[in-house]
Image (cartoon, rainbow, N blue to C red; front, top):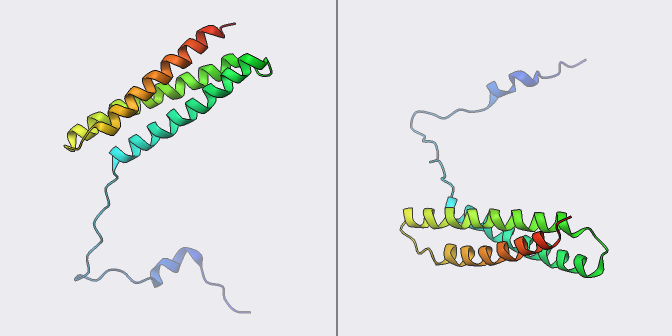
Length: 122
């Protein structure tokens, strides 16, 4: 019967860094791109859900009020991401054009989804 290795002590066999080796530098996240990506994805999903809501109003197949609420929350999240992206672009001294475009589109979609939300109020 052979002895099985103890998994808790296997780390002792791994090599460690010597004195002349350096650790790789930490990578920083690009918060501007992350914020804008979240905003773009939420506004596109809000647009898709708003179209489904309008179809639900027309066909009476689905309850449109929860869908309109979801579209409004997603458009609100996109607006928040656009404002945050505008702030981060200003901090990094980059052009805020993408953030302003996202802000305008998310405002338009938030207004449309709010009107749909008020129209489908129970």
